[in-house]
Amino acid sequence: MKITIIASGSGGNATLFASRGTRVLVDAGVGPRVLEQCLAAAGGEPGWAPDAIVITHAHADHVGAAARYNKKLKIPIYASEATARAAALGDPARVRVFSPREPFEIGALTVSPRPLPHDAAQVALVVGDGARRAALVTDLGEVPPGLLEHVAGCDVLLLESNHDADMLAGGPYPQHLKRRISSSRGHLSNAQACALLAALPGGTHTVALMHLSEINNRPELALEAARDALSGRRTRLLAAPPRGPLVLDAAPPAGLPPGLARASAGALAPARQLDLFRGM
Ligand SMILES: [Zn+2]
Ligand SMILES: [Zn+2]
Image (cartoon, rainbow, N blue to C red; front, side, top):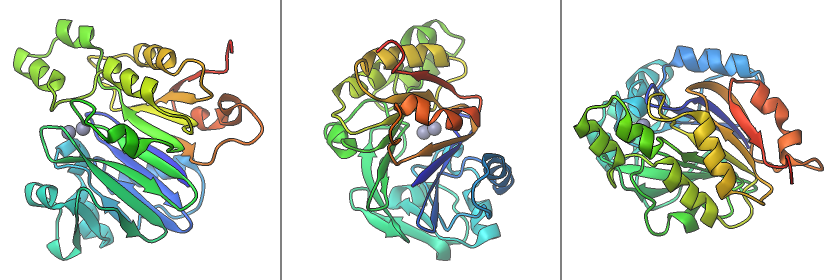
Protein backbone atom coordinates (compact mmCIF):
# COMPACT_ATOMS: atom_id res chain seq x y z
CA MET A 1 0.00 0.00 0.00
CA LYS A 2 1.27 3.41 -0.95
CA ILE A 3 0.33 6.50 1.04
CA THR A 4 0.65 9.93 -0.57
CA ILE A 5 0.21 12.93 1.68
CA ILE A 6 -1.11 15.67 -0.60
CA ALA A 7 -1.65 18.37 2.01
CA SER A 8 -1.61 18.55 5.80
CA GLY A 9 -2.57 21.46 8.06
CA SER A 10 -5.11 24.21 8.47
CA GLY A 11 -4.63 25.19 4.81
CA GLY A 12 -6.07 21.86 3.64
CA ASN A 13 -5.84 18.12 4.25
CA ALA A 14 -5.83 15.23 1.78
CA THR A 15 -4.07 11.84 1.81
CA LEU A 16 -4.31 9.16 -0.86
CA PHE A 17 -4.17 5.46 0.08
CA ALA A 18 -3.57 3.17 -2.89
CA SER A 19 -3.24 -0.60 -3.11
CA ARG A 20 -4.19 -3.43 -5.46
CA GLY A 21 -5.98 -1.16 -7.92
CA THR A 22 -7.99 0.78 -5.32
CA ARG A 23 -7.31 4.46 -4.65
CA VAL A 24 -9.05 6.13 -1.73
CA LEU A 25 -8.61 9.81 -0.96
CA VAL A 26 -9.09 10.63 2.71
CA ASP A 27 -10.30 14.21 3.10
CA ALA A 28 -10.87 16.72 0.36
CA GLY A 29 -9.22 19.86 1.69
CA VAL A 30 -7.61 20.55 -1.70
CA GLY A 31 -9.32 20.55 -5.07
CA PRO A 32 -8.96 18.13 -8.01
CA ARG A 33 -6.39 20.30 -9.80
CA VAL A 34 -4.02 20.43 -6.85
CA LEU A 35 -4.47 16.69 -6.36
CA GLU A 36 -3.68 16.00 -10.01
CA GLN A 37 -0.57 18.23 -9.95
CA CYS A 38 0.61 16.75 -6.69
CA LEU A 39 0.25 13.15 -7.87
CA ALA A 40 2.00 14.01 -11.15
CA ALA A 41 4.89 15.45 -9.10
CA ALA A 42 4.99 12.24 -7.04
CA GLY A 43 5.39 10.13 -10.19
CA GLY A 44 4.11 6.59 -9.89
CA GLU A 45 1.26 5.06 -11.83
CA PRO A 46 -0.60 7.13 -14.42
CA GLY A 47 -4.07 8.39 -13.60
CA TRP A 48 -4.89 10.48 -10.60
CA ALA A 49 -8.61 10.20 -9.93
CA PRO A 50 -9.47 8.37 -6.72
CA ASP A 51 -12.17 5.67 -6.69
CA ALA A 52 -13.78 7.13 -3.60
CA ILE A 53 -13.33 9.82 -0.97
CA VAL A 54 -13.65 9.35 2.79
CA ILE A 55 -14.26 12.49 4.82
CA THR A 56 -13.09 12.47 8.46
CA HIS A 57 -15.12 15.49 9.65
CA ALA A 58 -16.98 18.58 8.56
CA HIS A 59 -14.28 21.24 8.94
CA ALA A 60 -13.44 23.22 5.80
CA ASP A 61 -9.76 22.18 5.76
CA HIS A 62 -10.96 18.56 5.33
CA VAL A 63 -14.16 18.84 3.35
CA GLY A 64 -13.88 22.12 1.42
CA ALA A 65 -13.54 20.57 -2.04
CA ALA A 66 -15.74 17.47 -1.52
CA ALA A 67 -18.70 18.78 -3.52
CA ARG A 68 -16.36 19.66 -6.41
CA TYR A 69 -15.03 16.08 -6.53
CA ASN A 70 -18.56 14.73 -6.31
CA LYS A 71 -19.60 16.82 -9.32
CA LYS A 72 -16.44 16.39 -11.40
CA LEU A 73 -15.59 12.72 -10.81
CA LYS A 74 -18.98 11.26 -9.84
CA ILE A 75 -17.36 9.01 -7.24
CA PRO A 76 -18.79 7.90 -3.89
CA ILE A 77 -18.11 10.12 -0.90
CA TYR A 78 -18.10 8.36 2.47
CA ALA A 79 -18.86 10.22 5.69
CA SER A 80 -20.37 9.55 9.08
CA GLU A 81 -24.00 10.57 9.46
CA ALA A 82 -23.06 13.60 11.59
CA THR A 83 -20.51 14.75 8.99
CA ALA A 84 -22.88 14.15 6.08
CA ARG A 85 -25.46 16.31 7.84
CA ALA A 86 -23.02 19.11 8.69
CA ALA A 87 -20.98 19.32 5.47
CA ALA A 88 -21.71 20.21 1.86
CA LEU A 89 -20.83 16.97 0.06
CA GLY A 90 -22.66 17.59 -3.22
CA ASP A 91 -25.12 15.21 -4.89
CA PRO A 92 -26.56 13.09 -2.02
CA ALA A 93 -27.01 10.14 -4.40
CA ARG A 94 -23.25 9.55 -4.21
CA VAL A 95 -22.90 10.04 -0.45
CA ARG A 96 -22.33 6.81 1.52
CA VAL A 97 -22.85 6.97 5.27
CA PHE A 98 -20.61 4.89 7.54
CA SER A 99 -20.90 4.13 11.23
CA PRO A 100 -18.02 5.71 13.19
CA ARG A 101 -17.22 2.41 14.91
CA GLU A 102 -17.69 -0.14 12.15
CA PRO A 103 -15.15 -1.11 9.49
CA PHE A 104 -16.24 -0.84 5.85
CA GLU A 105 -14.73 -1.83 2.55
CA ILE A 106 -13.89 0.19 -0.54
CA GLY A 107 -12.52 -2.09 -3.25
CA ALA A 108 -9.36 -3.76 -1.96
CA LEU A 109 -9.15 -1.51 1.11
CA THR A 110 -10.76 -1.86 4.53
CA VAL A 111 -11.37 1.35 6.45
CA SER A 112 -11.76 1.11 10.24
CA PRO A 113 -13.02 4.31 11.89
CA ARG A 114 -13.02 5.28 15.55
CA PRO A 115 -14.49 8.45 17.10
CA LEU A 116 -12.10 11.20 18.25
CA PRO A 117 -12.77 14.13 20.61
CA HIS A 118 -12.86 17.32 18.48
CA ASP A 119 -15.23 20.25 18.03
CA ALA A 120 -16.89 18.38 15.15
CA ALA A 121 -17.81 14.69 14.89
CA GLN A 122 -14.41 13.29 13.97
CA VAL A 123 -12.89 9.86 13.36
CA ALA A 124 -9.46 8.25 13.29
CA LEU A 125 -9.10 5.88 10.34
CA VAL A 126 -7.07 2.73 9.94
CA VAL A 127 -6.75 1.79 6.27
CA GLY A 128 -5.66 -1.76 5.47
CA ASP A 129 -5.21 -3.90 2.37
CA GLY A 130 -5.04 -7.28 4.08
CA ALA A 131 -1.25 -7.20 4.27
CA ARG A 132 -0.45 -3.73 5.63
CA ARG A 133 -2.24 -1.13 7.72
CA ALA A 134 -1.84 2.64 8.07
CA ALA A 135 -3.54 4.89 10.64
CA LEU A 136 -4.54 8.52 10.16
CA VAL A 137 -5.13 10.33 13.46
CA THR A 138 -5.58 14.11 13.30
CA ASP A 139 -7.90 16.75 14.72
CA LEU A 140 -8.26 15.50 18.27
CA GLY A 141 -8.04 17.43 21.52
CA GLU A 142 -6.81 14.49 23.55
CA VAL A 143 -6.04 10.82 23.11
CA PRO A 144 -9.26 8.95 23.98
CA PRO A 145 -9.33 5.56 25.70
CA GLY A 146 -8.94 2.76 23.20
CA LEU A 147 -7.18 4.79 20.51
CA LEU A 148 -3.80 3.25 21.24
CA GLU A 149 -5.26 -0.24 20.82
CA HIS A 150 -6.97 0.86 17.60
CA VAL A 151 -3.70 1.96 15.98
CA ALA A 152 -1.41 -0.60 17.64
CA GLY A 153 0.65 -2.59 15.17
CA CYS A 154 -0.09 -0.32 12.20
CA ASP A 155 2.85 -0.22 9.80
CA VAL A 156 2.49 3.53 9.32
CA LEU A 157 1.09 6.08 11.75
CA LEU A 158 0.10 9.54 10.53
CA LEU A 159 -0.33 11.44 13.80
CA GLU A 160 -1.29 15.02 14.55
CA SER A 161 1.39 17.10 16.30
CA ASN A 162 -0.37 20.42 15.91
CA HIS A 163 1.26 22.87 18.26
CA ASP A 164 3.91 23.52 20.83
CA ALA A 165 1.99 24.48 23.99
CA ASP A 166 4.36 27.36 24.84
CA MET A 167 4.33 28.77 21.29
CA LEU A 168 0.53 28.66 21.30
CA ALA A 169 0.28 30.34 24.72
CA GLY A 170 2.74 33.09 23.79
CA GLY A 171 1.66 33.38 20.15
CA PRO A 172 -0.52 35.86 18.26
CA TYR A 173 -3.86 33.98 18.34
CA PRO A 174 -6.76 35.58 20.26
CA GLN A 175 -7.56 34.01 23.64
CA HIS A 176 -10.74 32.23 22.49
CA LEU A 177 -8.83 30.53 19.68
CA LYS A 178 -5.98 29.53 22.02
CA ARG A 179 -8.54 28.02 24.39
CA ARG A 180 -10.27 26.19 21.53
CA ILE A 181 -7.04 24.69 20.14
CA SER A 182 -5.69 23.58 23.53
CA SER A 183 -9.03 22.21 24.80
CA SER A 184 -9.87 18.52 25.00
CA ARG A 185 -11.89 19.00 21.78
CA GLY A 186 -9.22 20.96 19.94
CA HIS A 187 -5.89 19.81 18.51
CA LEU A 188 -3.10 17.55 19.77
CA SER A 189 0.03 19.29 21.07
CA ASN A 190 3.55 18.00 20.47
CA ALA A 191 3.66 16.72 24.07
CA GLN A 192 0.33 14.88 23.70
CA ALA A 193 1.49 13.30 20.45
CA CYS A 194 4.70 12.24 22.19
CA ALA A 195 2.79 10.58 25.03
CA LEU A 196 0.97 8.43 22.48
CA LEU A 197 4.20 7.64 20.61
CA ALA A 198 5.98 6.66 23.82
CA ALA A 199 3.16 4.20 24.60
CA LEU A 200 3.00 2.77 21.07
CA PRO A 201 3.73 -0.96 20.97
CA GLY A 202 6.11 -2.34 18.33
CA GLY A 203 5.36 -2.90 14.68
CA THR A 204 5.15 0.68 13.42
CA HIS A 205 8.06 1.36 11.08
CA THR A 206 7.10 4.87 9.97
CA VAL A 207 5.59 7.82 11.83
CA ALA A 208 4.63 11.04 10.04
CA LEU A 209 3.71 14.06 12.15
CA MET A 210 0.65 15.76 10.67
CA HIS A 211 -1.39 18.97 10.79
CA LEU A 212 1.52 21.06 12.13
CA SER A 213 0.53 24.65 12.81
CA GLU A 214 2.61 27.08 10.78
CA ILE A 215 2.11 29.72 13.49
CA ASN A 216 2.26 27.74 16.73
CA ASN A 217 4.79 25.04 15.90
CA ARG A 218 8.03 24.36 14.10
CA PRO A 219 8.84 21.04 12.40
CA GLU A 220 12.16 20.90 14.25
CA LEU A 221 10.45 21.19 17.64
CA ALA A 222 7.84 18.54 16.83
CA LEU A 223 10.46 16.17 15.41
CA GLU A 224 12.87 16.58 18.32
CA ALA A 225 10.13 15.84 20.83
CA ALA A 226 8.87 12.83 18.87
CA ARG A 227 12.39 11.52 18.42
CA ASP A 228 12.84 11.47 22.18
CA ALA A 229 9.50 9.73 22.63
CA LEU A 230 10.47 7.06 20.10
CA SER A 231 14.03 6.76 21.32
CA GLY A 232 15.55 3.35 20.91
CA ARG A 233 13.02 2.17 18.31
CA ARG A 234 13.58 1.34 14.68
CA THR A 235 11.14 3.94 13.43
CA ARG A 236 11.44 6.36 10.59
CA LEU A 237 10.13 9.79 11.59
CA LEU A 238 8.99 12.61 9.32
CA ALA A 239 7.02 15.82 9.53
CA ALA A 240 4.43 16.22 6.76
CA PRO A 241 4.78 19.54 4.91
CA PRO A 242 1.69 21.76 4.43
CA ARG A 243 1.82 20.80 0.74
CA GLY A 244 3.09 17.44 -0.54
CA PRO A 245 3.56 15.16 -2.16
CA LEU A 246 5.12 13.05 0.52
CA VAL A 247 5.04 9.39 -0.48
CA LEU A 248 5.26 6.62 2.12
CA ASP A 249 5.25 2.87 1.66
CA ALA A 250 3.28 0.77 4.13
CA ALA A 251 5.62 -2.16 3.51
CA PRO A 252 8.55 -2.19 5.90
CA PRO A 253 11.82 -1.44 4.20
CA ALA A 254 13.76 -4.61 3.48
CA GLY A 255 17.34 -5.10 4.54
CA LEU A 256 18.37 -1.53 5.21
CA PRO A 257 17.49 0.55 8.24
CA PRO A 258 14.20 2.38 7.47
CA GLY A 259 15.76 5.84 7.36
CA LEU A 260 18.21 4.75 4.67
CA ALA A 261 15.85 2.57 2.70
CA ARG A 262 13.19 5.22 2.40
CA ALA A 263 15.35 8.28 1.98
CA SER A 264 14.00 8.78 -1.55
CA ALA A 265 10.47 9.38 -0.28
CA GLY A 266 11.62 12.35 1.77
CA ALA A 267 13.41 13.74 -1.27
CA LEU A 268 10.09 14.14 -3.09
CA ALA A 269 8.91 16.87 -0.81
CA PRO A 270 10.38 19.55 1.41
CA ALA A 271 9.58 17.32 4.36
CA ARG A 272 11.81 17.32 7.37
CA GLN A 273 12.86 13.97 8.60
CA LEU A 274 15.08 12.54 11.25
CA ASP A 275 16.78 9.23 10.88
CA LEU A 276 16.48 7.56 14.24
CA PHE A 277 19.26 5.19 13.32
CA ARG A 278 21.72 8.02 13.52
CA GLY A 279 23.68 7.55 16.67
CA MET A 280 22.10 4.24 17.53
ZN1 LIG B 1 -8.05 20.09 10.48
ZN1 LIG C 1 -10.95 19.86 12.51
